Amino acid sequence: MIGDLTRAGVLLRLQGPMDAPLVHVDQVTALARRRDLPALLDRHVLYGPDQAAVRLGLRRTDLDHLLRRTLLTPARTVAVDFGKARGGEVAVDLYRGQDVAVLSALHPDIDWAALHRLPDPGGSIPWHGCGAHATNG
Image (cartoon, rainbow, N blue to C red; front, top):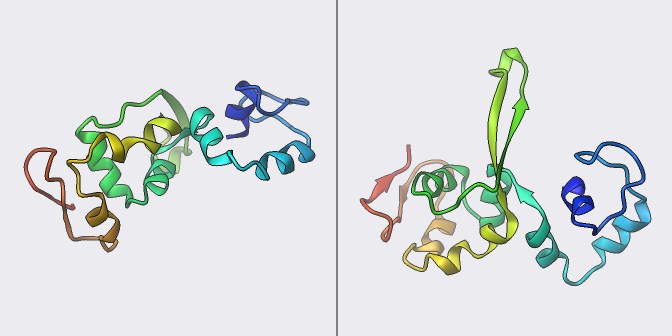
């Protein structure tokens, strides 16, 4: 996230690589106080699938269903190395915060309120506008 904000010019990189730059703590403190912080993050930050699910208030399994329906398109894919014991290098899609933020407005055919009420794990998924009714699994 800090790298995304540095690339966007929101934070000034003092040193280090662009993906993990060192920035002055006062910059971060000032940024945290901004009233427009959520909108600023949505414009400049890429979310992994777990972060996108949290941003939408969904379970990760529900986000996976949205992704299978191609309702959210990745902005970029990165390679993450989890080590040999955990499967090695894995491709992880990253999604624009702004795309995630407007998803419910773009798809009023989905019963978002019902999705937010689902227990974790299990239950049936209310995907009314996205084809056949699916169950979690």
